[in-house]
Image (cartoon, rainbow, N blue to C red; front, side, top):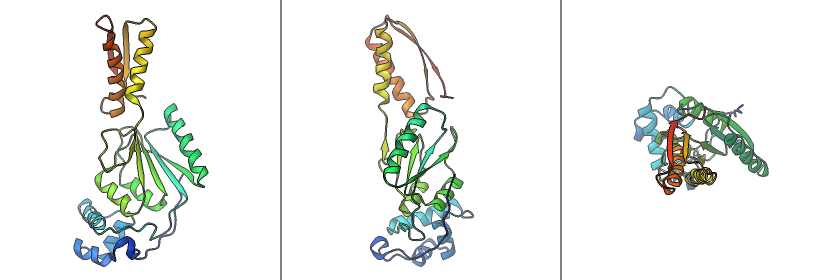
Length: 234
């Protein structure tokens, strides 16, 4: 599900762009104004090096269109790996409830497990022009962050797959505490031989849960044994 909007382009407001023009960015990047325009609109056909150089100059000059080429759609986009878990469903319900309170519609992008967000996804975001992005278990490349910021599209990462950069707004679950509570619950039932299937070890939240779980069992002493196996939540 996606909405598209007609394209238009105007210079940025002076207070937002400090008088920066497409021509200035084009000259400094040693490219044509048309190339800068393509980068602004998330079009394909631009080399990664050129796109990164233009995005960097836009950020350096404080160039932000904030709907300059067209208004934001009344949309909030939530990006997930898959929508087949209770966690995902609960998260969608919560986001949708808050979005309705603010007169926004929610669209969902499902990009698959262990699949990075690519240029096609970013091009779609540039067309949809959402009011904001909620990214779940996702990481953004530096160029993607620059591109979103240059368009005035805010974003937040929920339960990032790795340690988020200091410039990335992120919200994490109490994964360590949850794992610790699960371990204490099993110990409280009298179990001493315990098995645990973790999530992928390359995910920060999986490691945090297992760390909390192990901590609870280790505190119970050497009489408790633990056997671990890695899973994928699939």
